[in-house]
Length: 217
Image (cartoon, rainbow, N blue to C red; front, side):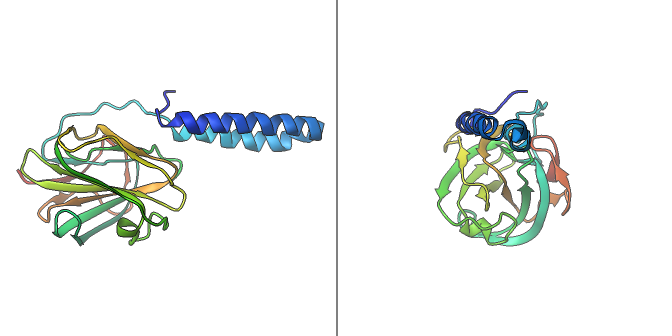
């Protein structure tokens, strides 16, 4: 199983803790040490599972909006996007549990025209205000169809580290990685009002593969 590059520090710490606690359990608890070691082994394995990088065949897209993450669609509504678009847009929000793949992917292809990191709170990721009050990043892309699409990585109550690798002027390719969020979070995508929304609330998405919307050419 291939592991994400963001796993290095976390897995190093988890390994050290696992060894130390296991040795102490064996030394002090003897035959009862398995009561500590086995649950610890499950947690240790979940750390590796969290940082897995699935092999996915990413296609080329022009009008399609691709699911940026693995997760569950929790919101589809018309909102005012005040940071970049300065107007109304359709917001599609996808929540990621700690068991989901947490690679963040571009939802559309085009040119990166805006990026910004915002420090903030750590409300639960499904809270509506988390989009504007939590720690988050905002990225905007100008698509080949001349649309402007905004998307945000949002930290949650558990997620405390957001990374994004894109810069203004970069070429974005729908479905390809641009960042990562550790341990549970959400992504919001803000689309033009005339976008055809294909997904619905409750849908389970696979990042880079599932089409969630289609923009007019």
